Every structure is written in C-alpha cells, then in structure tokens.
Length: 619
Image (tube, rainbow, N blue to C red; front, side, top):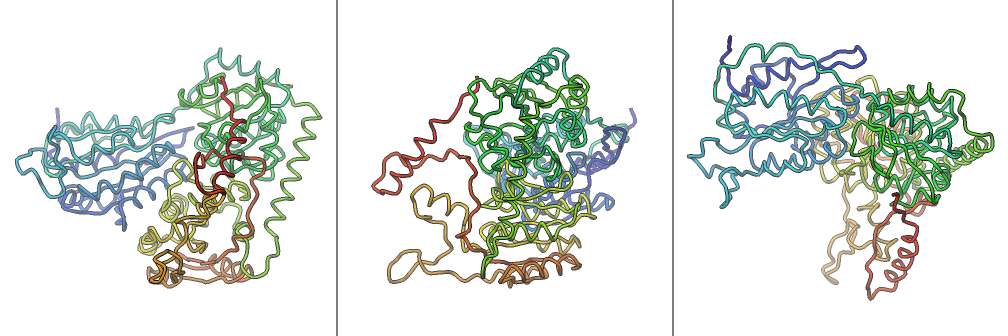
C-alpha cells in the first residue's frame, strides 16, 4: 500500500478539500472552507495545516458560536449542498460552539465541528482548560457535544481518521440524518505524523440521494387525497432543501390544493401564487389558520410539526382529520399518526401529480381559498401602510424592507418578535428569500448567518432583521463582515429591551418583568431608570456604515442608500410598540402560574385553561 506521511491535521484538511457532492447531475466541491479561532489546542495542528493549504479558505471570526452560525447560514442558503467546517481550541473555545451545534442539528443542516481536545497520551493531565472527571479519564468538555451532534468521535490515533472521515461525510450528506458532526481532536494527535494511504486523498463524489416512496404508502396517500374534500398542504423546510418548489407549484396548480407554510418552508411558493395562503400556526395568517381548522386531510411535506406549526396542537380541529406526511426522515413521516411516505419531496410530488391526474378540489372550496387569500393580501397591505405618526410600527418597517428588496434578495432573522411578524407579513418572491432560523430560535444567529447566506450567493442582497436585545449579545461579527468584504444590511430595531418576551410576559399577567433595559435606581433599589445605549456609535466602531432612522421616510431613504453601499450597513430604527400584529385565531401553549397572588396572572391562567381545551391528540 502506497502511503504519504503527514500529520493528522494535514491529512484532515487534505481529505476535506477532495470531497464533492452531486445531485441531479450538478457536481461541486462540498466544503467551502473553515471558520474559527486559534488557541493552544489547535494552533499547532489545524492552524499549521491550514497555513500549508492556502487554497482551503480560513476565516477568523470573533466568537466560536458565531462561526457555527455562519457555517449553518451558509449551508441553509446552499440547500445543504455545501458546507463549512469550524475549529476551536480546547475548553471554552470548544464549549462556545455547543449552542451552534444544537441549532444545526435541530434544523438538520450540515456543519463540521473540529474542537481541540485534551492530550491523548494523558501524562500531562490536567492540562490547561481540562475538566477532570473522578469517574473516567476518557471525558472532556467535548463530550457535551454528544447529545447535539448527529455523529461524534474522538480521534485518539491518526489512523482513526481513515474510518472516521467516511462516516463524517455519510452524515453530512444525508437528506434525513444531517446536522452537526463533531470530531474531537486531541492537540497532541493533531500534530502527530502517520503514513496515510494515498487513495484516501483521491477526489470523491457523494451522491445526495432522492429517496423513492414505497408503492403501498404512495397508493394509500393517493387514495386519501382522492377521497378528501378540504385538503391542505403544509410546506416545510424539506421542500426548499429538496429544491422542490417547481414540483410543488405544478402539483397544486393541477389539483387546486392550498399551501400553508411553516417558518422553514416559507418561500416554497411565491407569495402571490394562487394556492399560497401564507403562514400557518401560532404565527400564521388568517387564511391558512382558517383553512387548517376545517381541513379533512393535511399533507405535510418536509415538516416536523413543531408546536408553532400546529399552534400547540390546536390548528387542526376537524374531528376526523387525517394526515399524509412526505418526509425523508422516517421519524417525521410517522408523526400525527399519518400515512407515511418516506421519500424525497420532489420525487414524491412528481409521482403524486401523475397519480392524481384529473383530481381537483371542488369549486366551492376553490372559491373559499381565493376569498381568504384576497382578504389576507389586503390585511398585509393594511399593516404595511398604517400611516403612523412619528415612530413606525414594526409591520411598517417590514413593509419598507420588503419594498426596498429585490426579487432575489434574502431576509434573515431568528428570534424575538420578528419571526412572528415576518412569518405573517414577509412576501417571498423566490425560494430561499426567507431565511428564518426557528427550530432553535437562537439569538445572535442573524448577523453571522446573514454573512454565511451572502457568501453562499454574493449576487443577492441580504438583510438581517434584529432587535437590540439580540444585537447587544454579539455584534462583533460585523467586524468579520468588514474583514471579508461581505456586504450585508442590518436593520436594527431598538426596543429598549427584550420586546418579544416583554409582550409575552404581559400576556401572562406579569407586566413585562425583567425584560426592559433599565438600570437600578439608587433611591428605590429597583430596575427602573432607562439606559442609553448608542447603537449607531457601536456599529460604526466595528466598521459598519451606519444610519439612524427616526421616521418611516428616513428608514426608506436609508434602505436605498444601503443598497448602493460597498460595505456592511447598520440602520437603527425605533418602533412604536403600541401597534402589534394580531394573532389571527391562533394560540401558543405557555402556561401561566397555576397559583398566584397577582390578579392579572390568575386571569391569564383562566384564559389559558379555556384555550387548552382545544388541544388535540391526533391518533
């Protein structure tokens, strides 16, 4: 066997450079590079290997969690067809990546994590940043990655890479099992040399498979669709990851079935498609939520039915409602006691279209769909144009961004009140124009993910929509955007605190406790005096072009100027919280205290108990 002697880290980077993927005849390199921060646990291993391979791009970031968010945003914007790796030192650098790992796995997006680890030879223990265990010498903080990784391994010997790396690629390229993959790399092993077989570094192409449905399940699904009178499709993120938007459009144009969207699936159809009835569930539209209540068949495509999608199991109220689930993951296909069609979304839709030739919803249901869609479109226009005086409503800010954006532009968000309002109001024109992370709804995702989305397609303008609560947690990646000449536009809503949770707190009778940015008064000892944070100055200090918009007109002007800017731009705007977007006959299960001395909490609990009576178990 012909071998080549190199370090473990050098072999790892060489292998990653040679991996390609292919789907539908399109082939390209899988890894676009690596993000990270060097410390004593990886600088002499992976750091040296990257320096030796300048054609494998390395991007230094400001925080390890942000590195994973950026890689995840890149993978999502690439429909899982490309990925990035992230490296960190041992100890706090590694554990900083755990939140990002959980986010990637929950959203089933591929990212490779390469944290440094304690010495494999152990004689130096405890080394700097080592967490010792009295029960085992085979434990480090990197074991914390196990529950949030789809695949986890620790490389004690260089030759273990030979069998570990194919497993890494198997998981990262799986349509059903992908997520975060963690290879813990002891710092001594990273620098250790070994004779690796040369064929390990040949180009290799991994086929992103399109799973075929089994004949019996397909036949049962076809029969159920033919027999129903009020079908509703729930389009999840699997539609976009499968690049099945065209297949979905053709299917619903032939059958007349309306399409409601999850947070991950929004944009599966353009907003103005006749069968697109908008967002579903706790953050849903009036049209989709009303159709869901009386649907007799729900066809879930690439969705995992989160509590927001099902409005905490209150969305589907017809007593004998049935479900058909199309999903690459068997685990999700069987949810809701559905007829499970374990298959790729595009393949399944194409086959259903042919099998249901001549089948179409009746005229009365078609008329209802059209009327509800028209009502909803008018409601969005109303919320875009409230004509407020002074500070704009958040819905007007969303309208201004949408009108400033182009057909192919991208809106990125993740947490706070923004996902709820955006799910209802944003109008995607093309697939992937709505980039929402709501599987984990992780604050700090927005800015690094927007950088990743821009890197995935530099021709699209990318807007990150964030609140001041999120922004102040981690604004530092603005510097990374400036460093890499990646231009994004950040619209920063100044709520003076955690506005979304403040509203939720008030709805539970708790008056927004602990959610405002205020300082402690010396006289009363309470948190009650406003804190003045100059968000414009902060963003400017990090290298961004900045604007302060004190009105809707100024916001529109700033958005136009941002489009012509040559670097990342931050637009700060204060909104009027008195103008809230309604809930549109939806509900979310958040239990108020069952016993309280506060009358407002007791009243909230009574409302909660009444609403919970509508929760369903779908057997």
